[in-house]
Image (cartoon, rainbow, N blue to C red; front, side, top):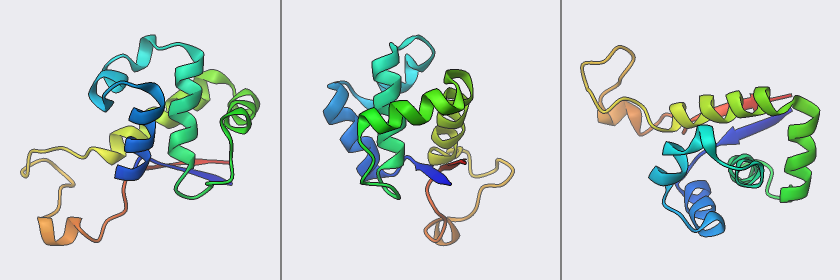
Length: 108
């Protein structure tokens, strides 16, 4: 089983690899090329699976299928950026939020 996590370090690594800001990458997520999507997928794996190369991330995406892999990336990204509205359902006060894990997506 693999875990996708878009932590601050993963996002920094992604920006460095792609040469674009996270906001630009995520805004274009539905229209990015397959090599960029592979890099996004790879970055999400790095916190728990730093030994995985981009080529290995690509093989994992092939195994899952591009659409399911993309959906997992999107799930993990949404989890990494919870709502900024403190009245939104499921949001927790800052004290509780600090104990929460960053957004994750599970890959088996």
